[in-house]
Image (cartoon, rainbow, N blue to C red; front, side, top):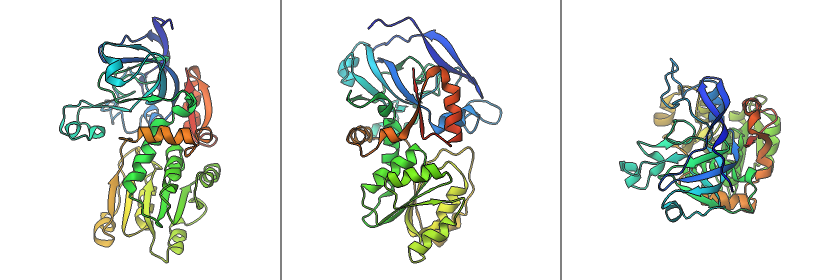
Length: 359
């Protein structure tokens, strides 16, 4: 393959200031991998970033965004060039399809030394810091030397493989939930990751698996992904319904994947005493709750869930086997030039589940 010297890439310059530009194709150094991007998803965090929520700061001083930078952290690519030692380090060859985990660890801090690399103190994340780990809304991208990479079987279609990162996040959240046989499990938020959580939670054999959302088409899909019951929280008192189904106690496990503040309070009221609450979402701002419910009233187990550590091989396997239905999740496939339409589709959520950009 002849690699061009320049490429098309989306560049973040500010809030709602994203531009398709011609930029140099990066060159791989020692331990680095250059891939031609085959497909890249638009994440809810990409939408929040575009609108200026959370990650920019009150004065548009970017604590997480260092513009100009290329966004995108859900992707798959074809390996087209390898820096010195990269083939041996990452187990990749020219022509392989590969995905890289969203976080690029430092491998030196206390968390990395303990194998807890996903909580690295001095990490880079694809699509947020210029020069450190440029993202995938481009024709080519570079995997840094410290990246955690995985080879992807070519029989997995690229628009399915772009789902590996969000599905790894879904798997990790379900692992954090510690679901026991027969549990009543509620998953709030039927975006692509919430639907993935449902499908994976189904494999844990819960007694009752309940999906919550506001959008009817997503609730219909939730039933396809394994929900025993799908409740529209805009039309029904979900707390009362769940308690009625559990002799008044409430659910055993509540996984919050909406990104909406009211869903946190809803979960605290819905969950039983000694239950397990998993908080996954990236919220647009701080969310206030009654902490007395967590401690004095219910003695809850509160678990955070961040990224998808050690879950990528499972995500690949589940997508290959159909435990996670990539075709049902990847509802829209657009060229890179239509990234703004893709952001609008992902933001509205009325038609889309996962929007995929194909450079």
